[in-house]
Length: 129
Image (cartoon, rainbow, N blue to C red; front, side, top):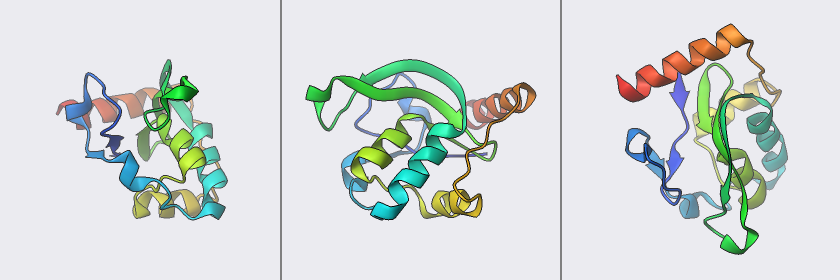
């Protein structure tokens, strides 16, 4: 299992367990034609945990509009906020993840309960050893 990095601008209790990148440095780097298909892939895959919404760190006036949780397609996992920043700001994802999503035709993956539980165990092992 591979995990997309977390954004340094979003503070979480377990932030030190994730690779971090700057959201501001990712903004506008994704090809416009890829925004919606990639955001739909990220949105439509299995949500493992949802904790509501947080405030957009790039535009606090929008209020709590950014989904906060964790999702997976069984091979990759990511903070759910990735879809928002891809769609709203054209934030770029790592090239190998983009290639992965493209190879699936941007068709979201919905895992069954057993597959989701296995994904959670794999993610926890990666993060906690």
